[in-house]
Length: 195
Image 1 (spheres, rainbow, N blue to C red):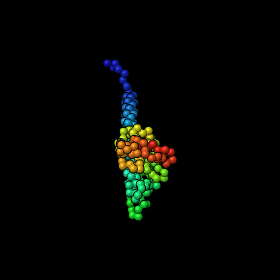
Image 2 (cartoon, rainbow, N blue to C red):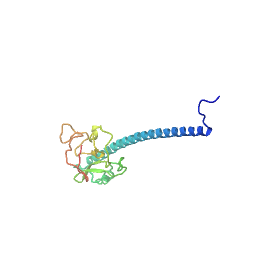
Image 3 (cartoon, rainbow, N blue to C red):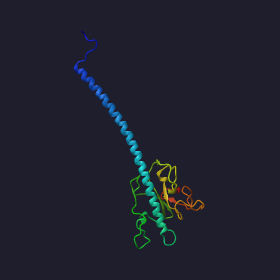
Image 4 (cartoon, rainbow, N blue to C red):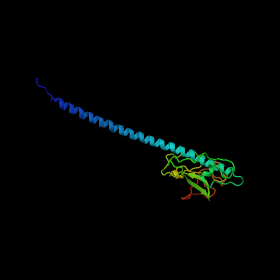
């Protein structure tokens, strides 16, 4: 009885199986590539969020160190002229530290910070990193602006006479997000939007 279908030779059958295997392999590679790209995006976002949290922690430490420097002034509040003054306060004959080390900016990886100055004195720092933060809602006690357009807008400043969150009844000591009581300038940037 003659067959009703077309019979393949064994070589053609092997070629067809190899072709299907290659197509299946290409599909697996494409799906794996998409999955890896999605995982890389999630990792990148998670890593950036972690760096933002680290920046907030380090910025708060700088702010507290500047506050400690000012509070330990013998008479009138004085502020550091260099960040290194926070490591070893030059006003005292004994070792007095307000900060353990000059931390690297977690976003740039460098120990270089933007400085907010009042005259020659440093009253705050900010990151020199480019880019818009992922985090939009911040703890109001940090004293930095919500809805920042750049990491440079996250200014960690201690204002003269500022005890932290500020007194809502006193216009000279505004709450975070209010106006700064004294003019401050970012080093090299002109007026600083001190929040």
